[in-house]
Amino acid sequence: ETEQLEKLMLEHAISNSTRDEKEVAEQMKEVLAAGTDMELIKKAMGNYVRSTRGLQLKTLAIYLIPIKASTLSKAIDIRCLNRITLLNVGPQSAFWTHMEKENALLPLPLQNIQTDNVSASFLKFVEKMQKCTELFMLERNTKVEIYSTAPKSGVTIGQIRKALRDKWPCLKRLVIRNESDYTWDANERFLETLCRRGTNLEELGIAFSSKGVVSTSILLYSLPHLHTSRPFLFINKN
Image (tube, rainbow, N blue to C red):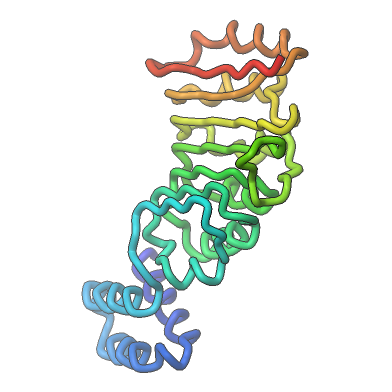
């Protein structure tokens, strides 16, 4: 089934080729017409991707440079990315929407994300990811000198908990830090889920407000259930 899916993906890419890609696409058609040798097809797919989909990077980190989804999708082969960091690059919603659509066609290998623009489209993509082992989410303080160029996210800890619903078993590093307000502070429901399902966490960074006495008690009571040898960071906003 996987081999057939790869073949269908290649046929789809060829059928949607632009004029600039016409010559490469015609070569791919010849390969498909020649037979069903999957090794030959995979080699042809690799050549096609390199010619039309951009750089095959496993890690991408961009800081302080505005991004556009259309530009990144052409410059980078997102189906090779394992780790991505986008910090202070402006609004990211369009990019994560594009990633979610690509992931729906064929699961992406991306497992590690760092971002400072946690939008609803980002959380939708995270929810649909096949696997997530490292997740760093930051909301910057708008009153500091170097503030985020993206609009305020507007998401809550409840939405974050929902996005992570199926990701807890594979999560090893998780940081949820909102420097702007208290909407991401860990509440009882979030902590109960974390302690019950996030047993493989090695590193954790979460925040508590002055009202978080009960939350802190729940976490400290449940810590023995977390199999970890790494440090946890508790951010006090008092």
